[in-house]
Image: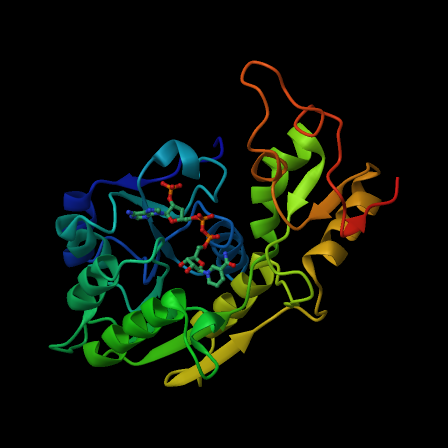
Length: 278
Ligand SMILES: NC(=O)c1ccc[n+]([C@@H]2O[C@H](COP(=O)([O-])OP(=O)(O)OC[C@H]3O[C@@H](n4cnc5c(N)ncnc54)[C@H](OP(=O)(O)O)[C@@H]3O)[C@@H](O)[C@H]2O)c1
């Protein structure tokens, strides 16, 4: 069977199938096609878990294990959530963006009245940004989502990862065009974590007992500045690149129109705060 050719339920089929006992899926996964989710689905599949994935575009889930059910829909579609959650005991909730509406929908759909058919364990992907004395906007948003999850009443595990290593993919544009990475933090350090490692923790939590009511902060094992991350990338990729404290274009706003300044031309490197080798 080709990848992605497994059972795909519409929301109605998912609901009817679960009600009739024909669907064995007991774990519901959101964000399955993303950086983290695709690792989670594979990790759970390796543990023989029966999965139901909420996917907006089945084509994007084609490389995921074929035996995982697909429910087509988005977190902003309450009808899709009801169908997707029928018969589910455990759910992994990843809500993209910074709003609270998706969290509210998902939690409202999964929340009590409890019963043998209800969701019994919610694993909520939050963020370490809410930790510390003064929360920034992002931290406050994540805190609000956690409050919604707690108020929902379904026993939860909260995962609070720090910055993902995949955030570096956002650097592709300036590296490709001009060989630099914009570094807004200078000496500030974080310990970037591979989303695959967050997924491994989520898979463990979703398949083992003893994690309800817990909160886990997850980070990588090395604190790095942006410049140090860029040096690692440069050495790994074998190409020269730099971390710059401001964008090349921002640094040269007065260049004549129609004529690229030297600084904006491909190949020019801004004054680096780090220089990669190779
Ligand atoms: N990046 C960080 O440093 C960091 C740190 C801590 C926590 N987090 C959390 O990690 C999460 C992002 O994880 P990620 O990097 O794996 O994200 P990602 O690669 O951007 O993937 C997002 C996933 O969510 C799905 N999705 C987007 N909008 C949706 C909607 N309206 N309804 C249903 N599904 C939707 C996407 O589906 P499609 O394939 O259809 O687009 C995709 O599967 C966020 O909740 C963020 O707060 C991130």
